[in-house]
Length: 68
Image (cartoon, rainbow, N blue to C red; front, top):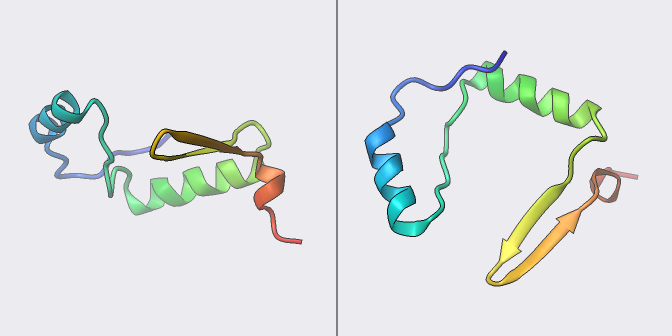
């Protein structure tokens, strides 16, 4: 259903994960796949957003993020 972007450096990502125990991958999906995922999430209530700020963890319900 979703396609990964070309040119991802698996070794570099693995090394980064091993060093930091997390990794953020910009450009992970192709543009078409990113749009499809966005549309899927926007239409579904079966997810929530979680954000970390230092040791603080914040959870957001999709309804809290929807414009009025």
